[in-house]
Image 1 (cartoon, rainbow, N blue to C red):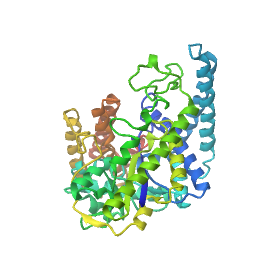
Image 2: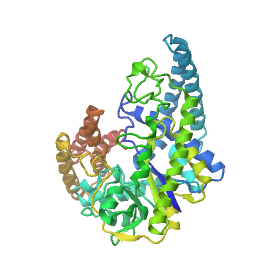
Image 3: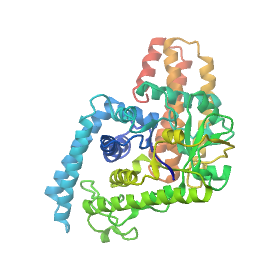
Length: 500
């Protein structure tokens, strides 16, 4: 009947040495413990049972860098130790109404922490990103990359900086993994025909990307999400998310994780930080929610995985009956949905693949593997779009972010000017010039305006954006100064230790 590709996009903003708790490195620690390490466990289990080319894992250069960073890994070990200590506090201190239930939950969380700690300790040949790449080299999955600092590419005003984002993303991927990526995740699935994005990807050797379903449907009409398509006259193939399938798991209005047995993400014990409640009902206040029951939640995840597998098969069957051709269904999500936002997500994923193995009509493959099975992609004049809430740029561009975008436009233009002016400078000024470019690219991260417009961690997002601008200005001062070249190098390297 057809091919199914699951794509998990793994990305966090660059938080290394930029805040710890509650905002900063805590983002990474929570995602690593609840999503990245459990997902590695799922993939190792599937690979051990002979599953090949199961899915595509996208690692943005910023998350891959942090996954391999010695400081971040040391802090992650400390975080896991504190996690287990908190389970002891819940075991010994809680005397509330659900004392016995919460003590049982503390034992569950302690086992979970030890399992993730053991998995982290087993990574002897590198960090978390290296472990994903090792699975790729075994043929279990595909790993793709992304532009350097996760910019919203259609809004990068300077073509040279857009090119640098794509090329440096490929270079960083090669530095970490020994090879350039065959595919890239376009940040926010954002595309515009005016930005020349496919040409940049072509030049970087990138062969396939993901776009959102409505982008493809507006470009090629009904049913067009079932076939990968080549973007214009490039060799870059766009694979479109099938939202009818994707949204069954998670959408702007709901999905499986809203089920009554699943752990409630939003309510937690203020003393120890554990989430001890189940959803119960999305309309009930916390005072009416029931204690979380892991066994029942895992059973619900397995049932939902079977439901999702049936939906995939039915969708492909309907397409083949109506079109006479095999189809390709792409479901793509943020990796952090599985485990961090939806605690039972890893259980769901493993059972989904074991269920699909018993559904021979559906071949589960990575994007690369699917392209090898499907007919030659036909060209499409792709229109502008994103996976934002309104499928355009309004999740990033609004009155609240005008100052950020105006400042960024000025910084981009001046960065090009300084790169040209000081290209033949001495080594100290070249170090400052490199850091200036690095700060400009960190400002380009799509995370900052998104956080502002979501109304979450707004102060942190603004501090980070304008903090990078301040460090950019500091590099300008160094470039223009008359202080000795070796002192400029030392001052630039001090900033590099924070933003590298």
